[in-house]
Length: 303
Image (tube, rainbow, N blue to C red; front, side, top):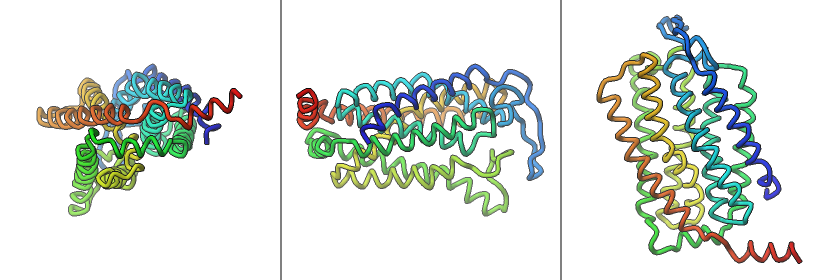
């Protein structure tokens, strides 16, 4: 596992930066193209750029994600990777968190974005982020996690409540349109030209249960709960800039929002993002920067 982490995060960072930069350089610039969906509804495709076959709404959201990945996600992976290579448990925890965030992003891209020339890059990032996350989890020092679980001044209850609340909110937000669609015998709103709501699937099948599990483990002071919380906290922390930028770009592309639709999500995710960022910082700081086992390993190598 340690051998995989010597180069794999660097590969993820390099490919991820290239993919995100391409999305920003080739963002939609022409007129939308109206189409009729297989369900007989009308929708507008971006019509130009990398995301030309995605809807105007989705293409603007993808551009926002690309900006956040390039500006925040990739630097976070590189910083954490360098700290991990210095045998820092903090670096390993943050590496797991940042790779988990990219795994979530590129699972959505590989499974949900309309086919474009970067499809194989999305699949590569999905694979490398997944196995990189697994290697980081396996390589995390368990004594460092136990130190966090035993720390008397760490906000254990706050972290547990945030994770459980995030699981509940995610489930409610996505189940509401799905249940409504079932009751009226139609498809969810904003499904448009897509065959299935991939984000709904990932959030309901993976993210919400993971957040609930992490919340319960942290409540019981189980060390694994803090490790599981890291990718969730990084994702929560990066939701605010993503949602805010998406809303701006979507409005600029002609998508109309009511004041409540603009203020509500930004305010809600703003609070959630602020709490997530604060708890992520507290979690990283609670992990010892160095552990005796790592230092002993270095001594053996140099001997």
